[in-house]
Image (cartoon, rainbow, N blue to C red):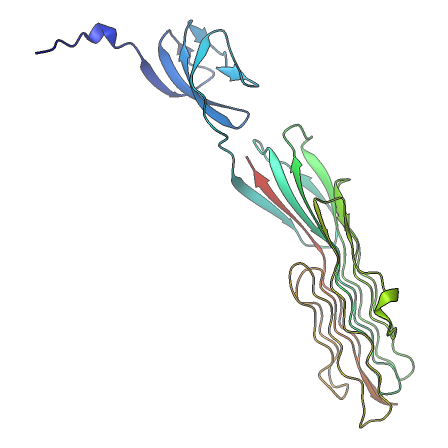
Length: 282
């Protein structure tokens, strides 16, 4: 029968490295350095000396196995109220993916005679992956407001308001969508636009101005443009009975109002607020 010499078994597993523990020769630990989990063997008695820094082993330790990056999705933060905010980076986060969308434009109010003003355009979107391993702990955030819907009027219906710009510090930003008007040429309208991102998207167009010339030939309803997050508001359902609906998804445009008679007009729907969405990775 073979003889097992217990004196030859020297490695001692000590688990995850602890800065306050006194380690002795042949102790083995695991430690994460720069997102990489590795195992180390102690080669000189050591207390308070991390096994490695920036990929270089301390003199008291040798690598046993060098692992792979252990990072992955960890958490997220959502900013969806118009105005100024502050992003605070949690401890241990190395990368973030930021999605920034501007506010949606408001739909235009009904416009004589028997016309439906256009739906609001959607805000643009910028998407960027950012290395924040050496970033200071905070970044300023701005979320653009949705544009107001154009007012109902027995005279000329009001134009919809432009959506506000959203931004994540100086990294990336996205302008808001245009307000709905009686402009029928889509080429003169400037859509919401993302800038500074790895991917920059334009906001969707709202339905253009619809013209009619009699109560029996009214302009059709005009819907708001779709954003990266989803669809815009529907236009007035008919006969100027309802206002255009507000944008349904972050950054989407409001629907347009209608005009039927000299005393019957409906307002446009408001554009939806923008958003800044931050996904955090270790």
